[in-house]
Image (cartoon, rainbow, N blue to C red):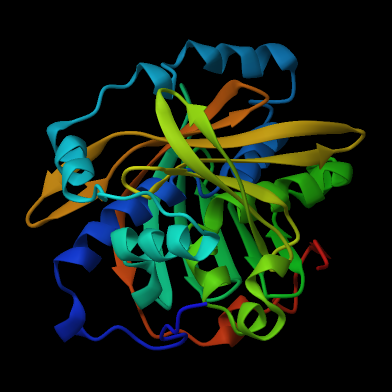
Length: 316
């Protein structure tokens, strides 16, 4: 495995063009970041819970119908490689080169998730390799939910706990973690555990697949988080364009997917502005991230379960 800088804070002087472009990919990949908890809020408030309610969301356009902007085309052209990557390490090295994730040790994102009639404000923060905290605020009545993962287990602080089916809590937390872990491939590849135990214990390269007209490198991740995920990297740009996981909800398994589309030119960088989350092929929500901070200084204690936590789960 090539030697990399495993833990450092990115200084202002190193924020060159590659990292600015990395912000674009970061925003694209995280889009969705609160689907499970957002669904739970709508369920508790009476907005969701019937199959027909979920069906109404399907009127939204699918990502496959979205057209690339000039900014996307420019990014793809700039990041094409003359020769294909032949090993897992080469694929991941190119993924780091394109995204700049290897130079990021923490991030904070703020955005808005919505479906046809509901909005939720979100604040997502993370520290490598596997600390996550997501705070959401329901626009309709101002109630808040907090989800966190401290590297060993997940926790949920929820004002509506008595109104929610506790059997679904693990599903909601897994979806939130699935969406929040935007730099998971890079952070796993560069983790101390992967260095000590071997990368193949945590990441596995699968045969290439065609996805929505793209040839994609497919990598399975497991072990660092309590979810097995499949990441699809465009074989030309090496940016993650899609990810999926099978997550159990009660007695049934649900295919959870994130698909990314839409970028907007902002100054000298490209900022992702739109992505979509699907449950079993049905569009669940769209999310726009408006603000991003890379490498803010945060303490790991911020991700520990609060004293008045409602429930814990997702033990690794």
